[in-house]
Structures are given as C-alpha cells and as structure tokens.
Image (cartoon, rainbow, N blue to C red; front, side):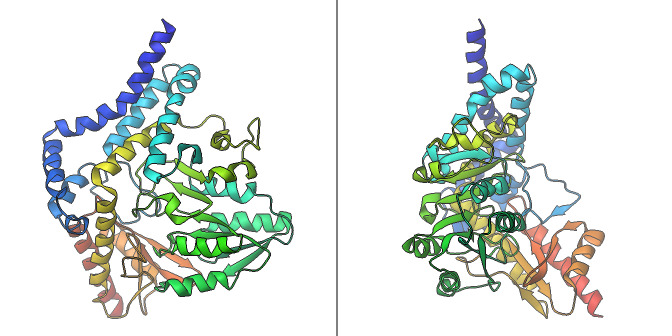
Length: 433
C-alpha cells in the first residue's frame, strides 16, 4: 500500500506542473495566447519581437503589480503564474508529511529537473548541480580549487561584488594573487577585450573569471574567445552567467568554459533561490565541495548538492519555468528583450546630454541597459522616477559606471516604456530649468 501511494504521488508530482501549465490554455485568455503563439511561430524572431499583440498575451501570464512599473528585473525576475502554481502544488504535498514526502517523494524529482536543465544547457546531466544562486555556484569553485600561495587569478573590477569578496578572502587566507582588469563601458571590440585579459596573463595564472554579461551595464563579453586564449596557456575558466542563461540563446559548452554558475530566478523565471553549477565532467574530482559529502573527491556532480534541507518545491518548479521558456522560444525571447532595451535607449538618446554605459550593438548587449544625463545626478532621476511615477529602477555607482540601470522584461510593453521615457524627459526638463 505504501509503495502504491508513493508511486501515485511521484507520478502525480510529475504531472502536477504539466497540468498547471496546460490549464493556462483552458481559459479564454489562454486560447487567445495559443492563437498568438501559432501566429508568431512562423515569424523570424526579430519580427516576432515587435508583435505587440503577442507580447500583450505573454504579459498576462505574469502577476506583476499594475501599480508599480518594475524596470529592475536585473535583480530578480518574477515567476509566471504557472510556475507559482507548480511551486504551491509541490509545497502542499511536501507539507502532508515533510520528513517522508519531501525526502522520499518530492526529492526524487530532482533528477528529472537535472535532465531538463542539462537539455536546456546543451550538456550532460552529469555536469549539472542544482544550487540556490550564482553566488553559491561560483563560490563552490572559488573555495573548492586547490590554489596555493603565489597562484594568480585574473578578474575585472566590474565583476559582481560577492565574487570579488570571495576571491579577496582567498587572497587573505591563502596568499593567492589577484590581477585586475578595468573594462571600459561599453566596449565594442573583441580584440581589445581579449588583449586586456591576455596582457594580464603570466606563467603563474591558474584561472580567470569572466562575467558573461556585466550586471551593472549589460555588457556581453566574448566568452569563447577568452576561454580559448586562456586554454592555450593552460589556464582554467570560470564563467559568471547570472545574466545570460535563458536571456541570450547559447549552450554552456559553446562558451568552452570549465566552470559555470547561474541563477535560475533571474531570466529563466524559476522560483526564488534556485541556481545551477556546471562543472566539466573531467574537472569534478579536483573541486572540493562547499558542503562536504561522504567522498569529496568523487567524480559525481551530486557531491555539490550535499547541503541538507532546502526548498524541494522550488527545485521541482524549475521544470515549469523551463516549459514556459520553451513556449516563448529562446531566440524569440532574446530578440524581444534586446528590442525593448533598444526601444527605450533610442528614445532616451533624444535627450540632450544623454550618455550610455551600454552598447546598441546586438553582440554586446541584450536586455539590460544603463544611462545617465550629463549635469544631473543619476540618483536624483531614479528617486523622482519612483516618487512621482512609481517606476522602479536602480542607480549603479561602481568603478567607472555612474548611471541608472533599466531592465524591462517580457511582461513590459512598449507603452510602459513610452511612459518611462516621458517621465525621464519631464524630470530632466524640471531639473535643467
């Protein structure tokens, strides 16, 4: 009886998310969305990016507040309703008897999720560990590698603070040497970017960290070219993909990195506190886990998941986020996000004194953008945007960057962005008068 109950629940869990997802098409809204999907499926992604009727129906898949315009999706993205529903289903089942259902039933679904993530990433499931965020994934590598005193690490001043702090801790603790690069923003020359890194390499360089997309500005770096130059010299590559996974269309092996971390609660729209660590199969044995399993030198990727109790419902609901991502289409999603960024930037560019820390060129940026207006403190514009118009953005003041980061999402319409641009123009006019 217990075995039958367990099988029933396991099969129910596997179907729960699918039922939640298919139910979206049973409503009048869902039927219209399905028709819209059928229409854009025949369009090139760049053309579909401009189909406002289609993206209106996508907007209705989210539960974003109509009272605040959220243009800070770079921090964390909302989940579409189908993902929220799946999470709640798994959470309710877990609460029927947590010690049993959570560990023996719900937890088994992780292998299905691992396989789905690997398919999306274009790699083996035996190279994918489910983590809670990019920081956890990358710090597993930063603290897990056998680096000794005098070994050099190359990174940039534009890297994410958590990673910088982690490397600095190893510097203090182990005596490794950090070699810093300062990247202009924007930078639109692959050769220049590669040269900055290569010039920092020495015979003591053991690993480089690459921020695939710089979170402050949306700058995309040529990960594959940098990885190839590093590997020529026997240097390993750690890729911070917090903002590129499920944002731009690529497979992890395409980057030729050795180690990779991302947050799934950003552009994949998975539940908060979900992420991925990728380690090349042949590299797994050399990395010490952040939380110790029985065999820390094992070649099993699951050794990086020995973290005790965590949110199994959140992990299982990742599967529904992947379904939603496939429904939209990776390339179609990328082109829409890039279109939205260029849409507002082109209109802000009409303002005298407008300055951008983000490229208009598609190979160097996608959905994130950062701007400033000469003569006005960016923080003053950001504050007025929220106080007067309830438009939420974030001010970035970091190294050579001092501007406002604007991050639309799939539920952002061009009408929303027109409102944002008009608000900026009005604020600038008032402050310049």
